[in-house]
Length: 91
Image 1: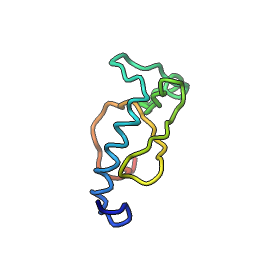
Image 2: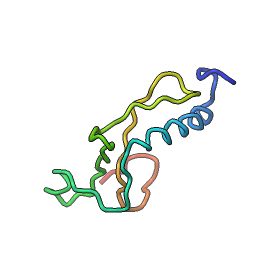
Image 3: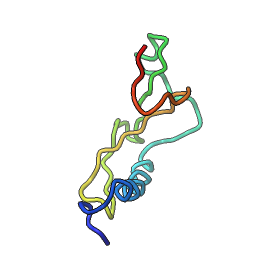
Image 4: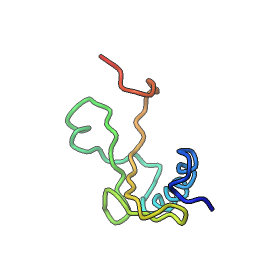
């Protein structure tokens, strides 16, 4: 197996996918709508909100068998809308 440092970006992404699957097991993903946080509650903005892990944390550390070290992983809920492109757009 190739070392992490010799992988292409695509190769690293493939290995991180398995790590992400491990991290997702720590989050209570349910089809129910999640509670709004203060910014979403107090404004009319569509805001990506954290999905808390089962134990209440906003992030988890997840190891990957083919990824060096542990990674801090977060999960955000989906914000509806259309993809505007790869970068920010001017208003």
